[in-house]
Picture 1 (tube, rainbow, N blue to C red):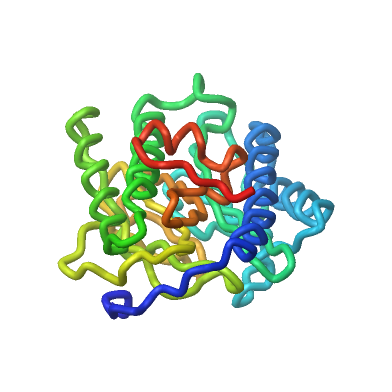
Picture 2: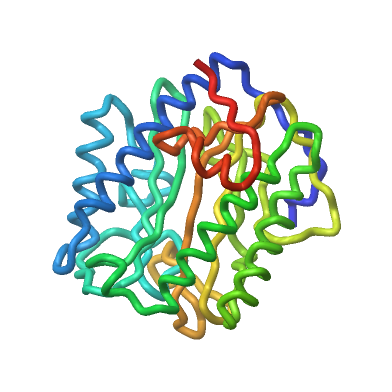
Length: 282
């Protein structure tokens, strides 16, 4: 479990954060476009083509395409698929729960984010799926609020776990926090140290410094979190076939507060809702 090493986080300069914001905006805009465009009857490959065209027309490059042989521009994980779903011939049905993960590169800097929603609109979703989406997104922002300069990085995972525990009580159902896949540092590479667990750890992890940039990404299941990788060597699914949800943002923490680099508004509204300080760079 290598992420328990107490690595030192290297902070980014204001200029580097601005460059990452450019990549983050491409990711945020791509995901917004895909959420609006997704409809029953589409294939996940059609979504992938839309994403690649949008990213390239924005002057960016897809982060995922070709990464360790991955064949898509986005990851499309549907229903029992937790993460890393490969876009292909799968046809989306009304009421499916889809998680879309997207990355883009601008001038050598990366942005990475994921959203989850119901194909055909929330009104077509099962109540338990809507609650799962809400619980996972809420836990993401709890984790983001815990990312504070001078505090241990692993406070993020503790906050995610506490948020999910609150949702378990509020929704009167069990949720599983996927432990095998975690968040990560990000900058001139998509995946960098340190890793960012989505659950409480005994270790504190490295201390968050001014200019820290990480991708926080809780993955939550409606049943047990146990999972396996399919024969395509990428797609991760729940063993019990319960549905799963994935939310992610690339976040910068500075001495002045937080800036969500992949949120279109920089995270201003959500950061205020969780009682943290919003601190964009202009």
